Image 1: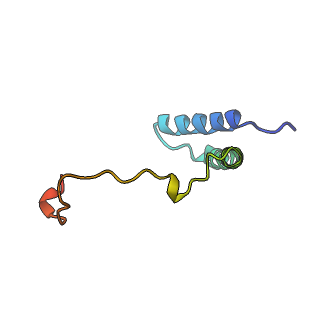
Image 2: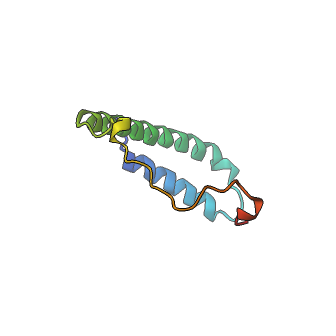
Image 3: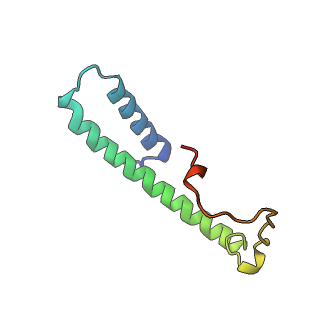
Length: 93
């Protein structure tokens, strides 16, 4: 059996989500199948995302992009106003 691609698994998730959103009333007879297929598709997507993240991290670290030291950080911006203590009136909501 051929391995499921990310695109195929993501399509399964999209189709099931759309199907569930468009139901007027729950179809309990298909629910177990939908959940089982969705969990399998999620696991395929998650594994692929994890693999890509790991590969990107290794590639960036190998290129020296992922490792920064404190010396590489720019100095903090100088502020012309003094820092005020927190005031409840500063909260915008």
